Amino acid sequence: MIWNPSEGINIGFFTIRFYSLMFVIAFGLGWYIMKHIFIREKEPIEKLDTLFIWTVIATLLGARLGHVFFYDWEYYRNNLLEILLPFKFNPQFEFTGFQGLASHGAAIAIIITMYFYSKKIIKKPILWVLDRVVIPVACGAIFVRIGNFFNSEIVGKVTNSPFGIKFVRDYYSSRDVVSMTQISNVNQAYHALVTDPKYAALLEKVPTKHPAQLYEAFAYIFVFLILFLLYWKTKTAEKHGLIFGYFLILLWSVRFVVEFVKESQGGIENIFGLFSTGQWLSIPFILVGIYYLFVAEKPFEDEFKI
Image (cartoon, rainbow, N blue to C red; front, side, top):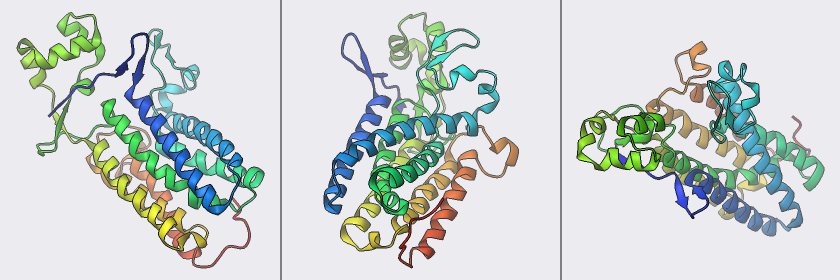
């Protein structure tokens, strides 16, 4: 299969990027799920608005800083303005959007944010909040990975598997394809590369790789369904921290396993070796999840202190 999607939906004066659209869907579904949770728990819907806004900010800011510090600090330490600005200044000025988001950073930021939300807004133990928030978070993770697939990023290693895909936009940059085809419009240049027989030799060079994003998204569907059913169909939520523990184990175990077929994304793996950066960062989350499987057996009467 050859994968060469357009950047998004062109509505004339503006293009809605598929990656951005997936984030909108993720946050929208998250709000919808939490609304029903709040109704079930008889919590004021007004408090959901604060939760939504804080979670969006925490997700985007945490994911950005996570990428900067976990994966590419060597670059950003010399280009500090690019951390929070959608521009690239080196080697030349270029609008790039916010490229580079790390889910581990988002997870850390969300946990910290939920601590303040539990103390200042909803006045409940942080584990009560986390047990419920992780349900829409797991749902959102599905769409984030689908967004990565549309962006042809976080691709897998080269494979001969029947599931392998030729990620044209991963192999050839926009500058490369414009230079090779002499077509100034980037999307038209990519389209010509894929469909015009005279570029068949260039297309042949594109290796077939694991669609790691889809593997992860597919597995996250089951993570979401398990957490959803645990909350709605069982009494698991009565033990503070238990659903949160299952979430940490399930979601980050999926991430750990899928990392084996992903291309290296650099980062701290260059220091520690053995595992990828994503795997090293997933291990602490999994261990914390295992911890909560045991401590959640005893009901928490006091708020969990960080």
